[in-house]
Length: 85
Image (cartoon, rainbow, N blue to C red):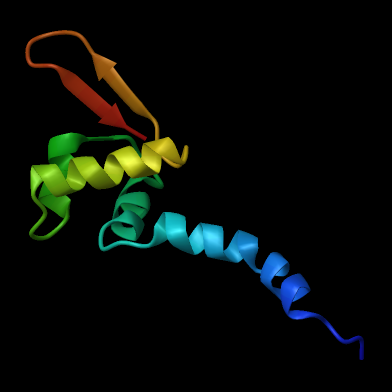
């Protein structure tokens, strides 16, 4: 069996660490699960996730959007319609 240095081991787990960093948090997996099969509006997500505040949901959605795991589409009108997929 080949001996592996600590540095090689640390480099090999970087992708796993990155994924765990992206998905860590209370809501991210719930959000991704809800969006797997259909687009949803912000209020719909808020209603499906127990005890989530708009501020907390917005924060998690922005992080997921930053990592390109969700897409946000805003439609003009009154009221403004926001679809998340």
